[in-house]
Length: 127
Image 1 (cartoon, rainbow, N blue to C red):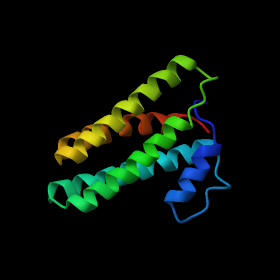
Image 2: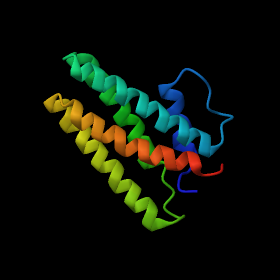
Image 3: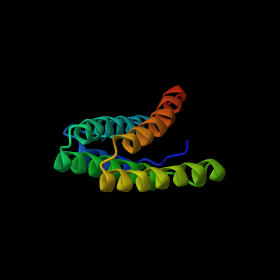
Image 4: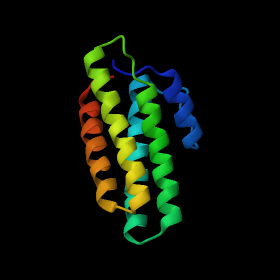
């Protein structure tokens, strides 16, 4: 597995109302990715409507979740893969900062598409 579980559980509990204590590490990562995708979709909608405060709020929440995904990577298992994922998460964070500064729904959509690809692959992995 490419992710550890400790920081993922803590981050998920900070961002969600239900408990993640009983979830497997695989499920925790799935929940974080799904939560980030949800917040990115909301941020894009707010950006399209020119709702800057809400856009910023949801970009911030998505960024926190992506940061947690990066922090949860377990570099002992497949270091090349985890390094690549870490760099991709860094790129996503950079693009979200740019999207927020430029009010760019297209940049938010780019990050959504990248994360959705990882999420879809993660769903194919057995827990």
